[in-house]
Image 1 (tube, rainbow, N blue to C red):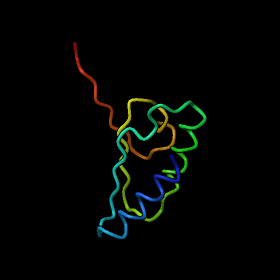
Image 2 (cartoon, rainbow, N blue to C red):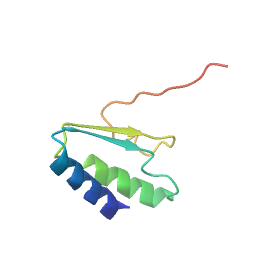
Image 3 (tube, one colour):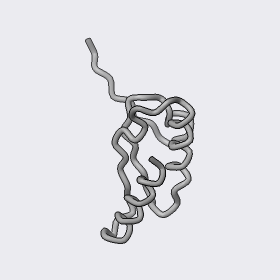
Length: 74
């Protein structure tokens, strides 16, 4: 997963002049250690000014600068 992510980020950086990257559910179907390793790898990316992660698990909560939580009132 990390290798595929690295390739996609490199292609994004070369083909588009963007300083923003979005990750939609990057840790799907991973166990806890792999989710934590991938989250750390994503947070260590320095080539983009902003990184956005959309996730249903709490893996990124400990290592993000900002957190937006969306809930539904019932």
